Amino acid sequence: MTTKTQLQQLTEFLLASLSPIVKANNIDAWQERGTLILSGEDLGANSYQVAKWKHSAVIAIEKFPHRKVNPYSLLAMVAAYLIDSGWSRDEPQLADPQIDIDEESADTTTVLIEVELLDDIELVPDVNGPVLFNGARYRVTQAPLYIAETVDTVVSVQGDA
Image 1 (cartoon, rainbow, N blue to C red):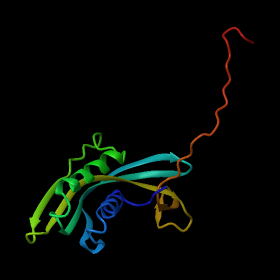
Image 2 (image 1 turned 60 degrees about the vertical axis):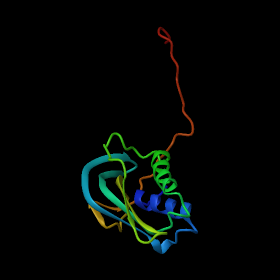
Image 3 (image 1 turned 30 degrees about the vertical axis):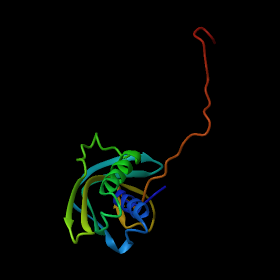
Image 4 (image 1 turned 180 degrees about the vertical axis):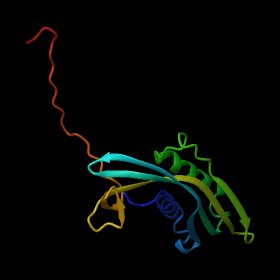
């Protein structure tokens, strides 16, 4: 169960994929222009999804060595990660990533990747949690997902007593 935002996950993936050519101090990421979509959905086990956070995420890669790394490889990494992530993009109508490239020198550029993301904001019970909701205390984390390991079934045929 992960408590990292989608932006953190994507940024870590890009850093790992581009390392050691791109250094950690040359990648920065932030969120902007967000919308808090209220839901209050009961997830069971006293957990709730109180909202979704739809925002524009920006990843800035400075000193990107476009002569050492094919820039289309970077574009493919972003696309492949978003496709493989399983994060819904169609239903919430998230825009495709936008890329802005500024030349720094003959060998390096600054690449700005702007991508719309949607994070769930889920609450789980915690008597010391900072969030008061429905008269109880909660903390923000991913709600546990319980999957049945066995199923009991009863089959009856019409006319059986």
